[in-house]
Image 1 (cartoon, rainbow, N blue to C red):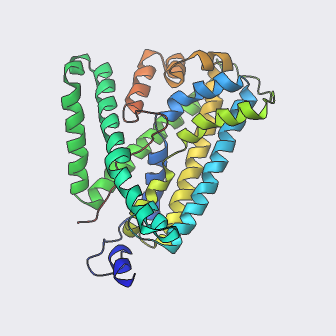
Image 2: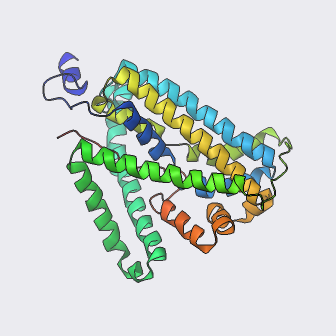
Length: 310
């Protein structure tokens, strides 16, 4: 046990350098969670609930549940700030064989599949913005994976800078959409009435909500890279999730300001539909550019810095 911990806790010889600040941690969590789910899943929620008040409640309840999970995971991170995150927790809580199976599943199925899907979806949305690229989808996807690998190989400073830049870009784009939709007088605010759905319908509507909140635990994999992890890791998870909860609740309020719950339910791309109403056709293209790195509502991930070679 002693020798194993010396190689994984980030404090022994040859360990990773702790370069991630609390701000970096917040950006990693926010960037990992905010994905295509918030652009697509509100329609699915509206199909089940049909009430503006119930829709907003669903996103707030889902955020609360995600926060509870984040608090629990941040507590584990404070106790065991080692590289590996969930792998370490499963190993210590149950048995090394459980962690072993989890690790290989993540390597061969989970993260590798996500990477492939993200890169192909990026290529498809790039072709929407630049039609001549439609004939080169696989090549563009391959180049994207190679570029992200090169960024991570470049070291912690480069990869965290790229991560922070794109996370802030997403937050700013959503904030602009929220402020414009909620602050423009030409749009009539939806009447927020709570038509209490039955329990089974409400619980079922939480599935796409919780999928949209997924990804916050990715920070635990980087615990050995974090400065003062006992302080910064909880700040990262709780702070990042707090930002996401506020954004998700406000963007749904913005959707309901611009369109009715029925229109949301009938839309296949609710964010693009709202952006087109607010900004015109150019707004829909901007939303497409923000969605192209997130393939599925149930898999919201980012390329996070994995090592500290420099």
